[in-house]
Image (cartoon, rainbow, N blue to C red):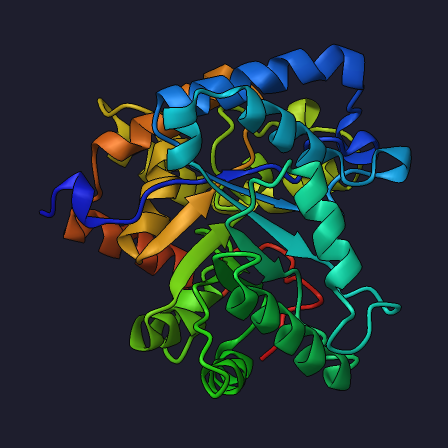
Length: 326
């Protein structure tokens, strides 16, 4: 069995920060807790933060970046040097051409107070406007060559599109540092035969797993319908919860006596497949539970057992991202 240092680390997703519609975020109530969450992340060596210019809703648009910028500015200089903050720029219909991201990038960097190490294409437009994507990526490559940002990443691309984009950028002398896709025990498509995980290994691209806890389906102790959250997330709990009892039982058995419980099992399954999970963290307690996963790994037999349950014909699946390309 490998040592914990042999697998990817764990990052932090901040998509819920500032999202008032999905999470009932209220700045005066929640910002202090998020500041404590950020501080605890630094204490527990969770140093990769993923955000986006579209995280935050309504008048709070860009709020996640603003908060990260404030929290990072308050950190000590040694802590700041260890941080890696990555943001995603949305390919909105009005962002066109090679210069289409210039203003958005400048605005994100300003909200982050200059602390921006990686810029990423938020989603692929291959399904609905393939002509839009190439020039936007070329513009991001320009930012890397100019030294405005250290590295470039992409999101929601399948193996075919990733190869195409990799070739396009390689011809310009710019590497793809990372790919973000939905990956969890309820969204295992990237690790299937011919999936994007294999392409990332081949091309030397870091694989980042968003929604690794499947919005809490893999980590919550109680999935009783009466305890389900409200709204669309609750509907998902009621639909998938009864179908994942065997999987959750296996996760509980594997996690018995190990720190972090089911959440750590789900995160370490992603790590065992070479992906860095970025769970959404909104409290210091969640940080501690997440960091506990860094102290241990799944055995090969445990990973195979979970693989069989996750990849079984008819296994429960999270909804696919509609912008995910082939």
